[in-house]
Image 1: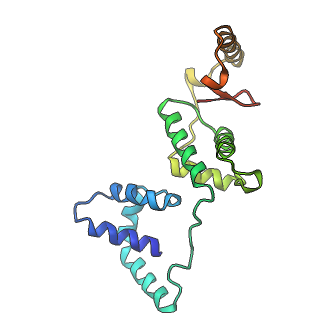
Image 2: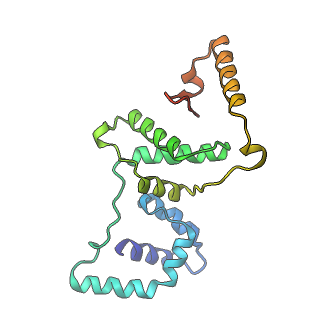
Image 3: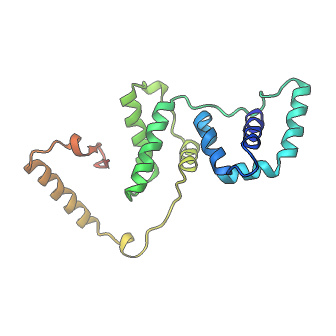
Length: 185
């Protein structure tokens, strides 16, 4: 609640015509786990009177800022790398799924040096929050995109590997390929 009031107060100080999306963008740098977007700021502004009253009651009781704390990320560097990678993959038209996102997070954690016992559990809730924060939604593929022949895909996969070997490229210079045969940009 304290963060919400802080953000709303800051938004009002920016002037009457300041865009809600700009407020979300500004505060996402300080509170990245909130994953703020314009509709969230808009909803907060609609309910601001109720939030102010609740916050004042919390102040009187002495628990302002202690209820419903949002836990800040334990590995912000890894999370930022993942978010940047997802944004790049989306702009390149790469099809993502939960398993790919989990494996990429683990890869970034290894790069940063996060030990296995310090890594997140990557539960369904964790994945849902990553999807929400990055604006990912699931889509079923229909038509030509949904009817790719798996044998053709495997054949192309092998053909590309042969070309890479023939020309002397190192896979790590082009892609990172894991044990499952998935390529990472």
